[in-house]
Length: 158
Ligand code: 4NP
Image 1 (tube, helix red, strand yellow):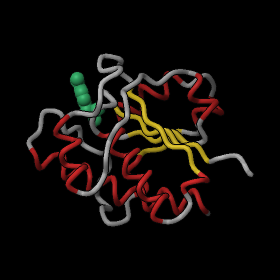
Image 2 (cartoon, protein in one colour):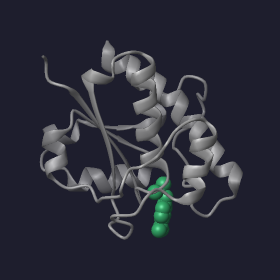
Image 3 (tube, rainbow, N blue to C red):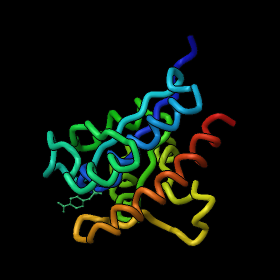
């Protein structure tokens, strides 16, 4: 069996956006019948929530759409640049942090912005941090992630 395609989603805390992206992508590869070809994970640039489940509000919003988020938060490390084929960040701040951590220029080429894969939200340039937002903020995150995951999966399967 060929090597699996490995995708790492990254945000700041790894308790809202990136574990949700992981959950949406896991469901999508299942739905498309290609789950055995992918390894999907997430991480944060900040270590303060390491070991935590996703934020309760994110889990509730995801659950209403059928996604069960069980990831435990962890901080991204230099080894992740070797292990993963794609590193997908949620906003410019994550992009800068992850870029700074990249062990080499070649490995930094693995970094992409999540919204670059959106097709139904052409004006979106980042996935907004919902942590200090109300319920609607979490719905916007999921809308963007569902759109971007479709585009990203098509890109991976090209
Ligand atoms: P995330 O959201 O980056 O989407 O997981 C955040 C979670 C926690 C914090 C910031 C953003 N925080 O500052 O603790």
